[in-house]
Length: 550
Image 1: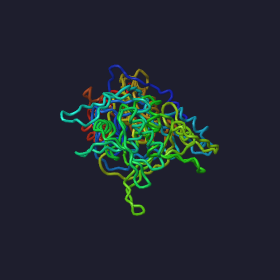
Image 2: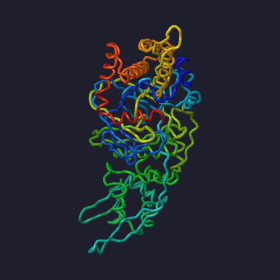
Image 3: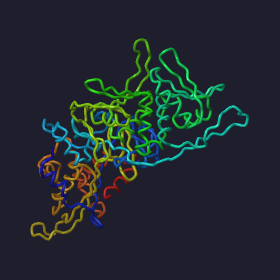
Image 4: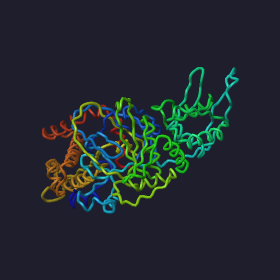
């Protein structure tokens, strides 16, 4: 935890702002990254960060989509963190800022009502200062755009005399969305040259769903369906319609592993989306209320569909957990890699039961571990590990919000960035009369609590000092003046000290004054540490620095 002095400087920083026409400027910043396979919530799919492109949009901390201005990659060989919660896991550098809240590790704060108070203090914390049990915030998609109709795009070929026509457009209502859900779970499209059809396969006991699909097809497309029974275990309902098959393939994909929800449906009003969830859950989901601990879940081999369902559920107030089952052979049967969306907490089960119109009465008290507040799902960190990593890491430059959402967390797209400005003049005091002193010093910093506090403190320590005295300020002086810093935050004092060094070096350089060997050595050391990154990330760093004052 931080000392009282750190908190005071964070809440009421001294000397914050810019100096007009400064004599010297020091600019220091960190580059932070995640591994290239990290899944990012884009506006049309969950995709690895390395595969994202400039101009695409991703979900930010405000629950809206923002444009990517650039994607960056660099090689590294360092210790990084693996952080896990119920939605997934991410590997990231320890300086990466995570939208989160620190929670005291005592029995009292293990209870929801006591822990909940800390969500008021959500902020950007370095991954390295987070611990198991701390809370992270996962943004819930808030954009809404209703669509009334979708064109079917059916055009009869010149010599096509058999295909039955379908309406030119389909109304996006509860009926079509429920049918879409059935297709995503149990549907298929067959496009052989001699046979084009769309079909659905249900368990033989699910006769009411077969009837529902038949009625929906007739009501929406004015087509008659056919039903076949396979042995005693499955019922097959299908329609020989080129137009309907092509429409569903275009909207939802062909093949179980390629199933997905079209982007416009992800933005529909929540009330409409309930019908999509109903159809999907009736096909590939379950809801077991007979167990001592009720459970619900959904299984699919489509990675895309699993994460899209996760997004839909969060919008409805249902917080799921997601896990992957690897390919395996069980009882002689080969099972493909699959993704399971699991719902187990009482409040989420109650909400899901309402959506599915199922009776659910569970009197058993269950400890609340996650909840929704201020447009975010609040989730505890379940595990943190340090791992050795060698290879490429990536980051994004995001327009406006400066943040992006992974499959598990919301991350800021930059680390601590400090600008330190100095104004130099002659001292009027008797002791230092005629000597050059730092008459004014100000800072602009984007970063965590410690970054702000150390920036504030170094301006206090440097103001009124001669340049030689200011150069003697080191990280220990900054840290001790603040009453100490957590070990993971010591680097913030180094950044503040480096910023002051660079500002003084900049002053001497501009004035054409002799630079001491010690100052030159310190400058070269700082320069060497960042010159490789600066060369590769020149445009990105300049934009991050420009955002400091925003």
